[in-house]
Each structure stands twice: as structure tokens, then as C-alpha cells.
Length: 182
Image (cartoon, rainbow, N blue to C red):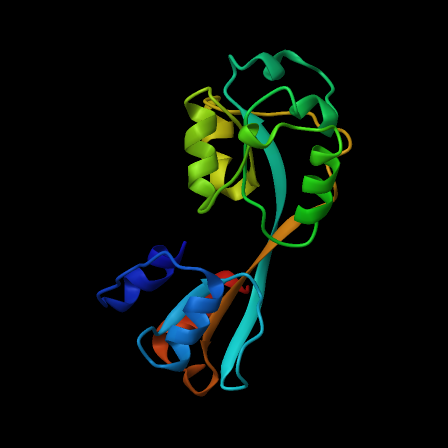
């Protein structure tokens, strides 16, 4: 979505994956122009504009044993290896529920980025717990299925556009604000 919004500007774009705190630091030291972050503390010269709250879901390969169930509970997930993107509010509640089952430590993997959890789920070796946007195309294609976990905590990951506030009217920031915040 970022590349699509910036394409009409005819500018070179370089993308890097980093934690939100690092992106904020790189914006502050001017080694980065724009970032997508989860809202984190930031200096006053940096603007952080939330644009999307994406629900966290549980997914598995369609042939995974848990994919056959019509209803699951968090406790049911302890039967499987889990790759969890443990970000945002709700993550600790989910992990607490899972550890209370208990789940053996060797079957619970907190991973980043979320694509790692998706890749492990595609390989049939793990249940993935991650933002829906990460696997939207997999869900549409049927390469992964959402597991019906009835007691999954209400948990979403908010994404935000981060940029230097003084550059709010620059063409790239203006294009992204129009595309993402509209």
C-alpha cells in the first residue's frame, strides 16, 4: 500500500524492516523519511498517525489437525506448536491463558516479523497467531485457514504512519496521509 501510494511521485523508495522504536530513532536522526510503526513513545518533532487497527487471529494450514475443528479454545492450541507475534495490548493476556494450560516452552515461539509466523503455519508445523493483514491473501487463496478460537482475547495491532512533523506537507507524506488516513 505504501509503494502504491508513492508510485505516482516517481521517487525511488527503499524499504527496511525494523522495530518501531528503531524507526522512530531513525526518523529523529534523519536517516529515514517515513515509517510504519505501532504507536510508541516518540519525540515531539515526530508525528505518529494511527491508520489501521488489525485484529490478531489464529491460523493454520488446512491440513493441520486443529483446522478440522468447528470451535476451539486457547487451551486447545496447547496441543500444537505455536508461532506468535506477541505485539500490542492483548498479547500478554493471550500468552497468560496459553501458559496456564500449560503449554510446554518448546512449543511456544514468539517471533517477529509476523511473516515468520505465517511461513511456519504454511509449512504445517505451527499454528500462527498474527495480524489478519499478514495472511489476508493466504486466507483468500485457502493456503491458510482461520481457526475458530472462541476465547481469543480481543486483540488488535494498530499501525501508524510516522514522519517528522515539520515535513507533514512534503509530497511523500501528503500522498501517504491521503492514501492511508483517508
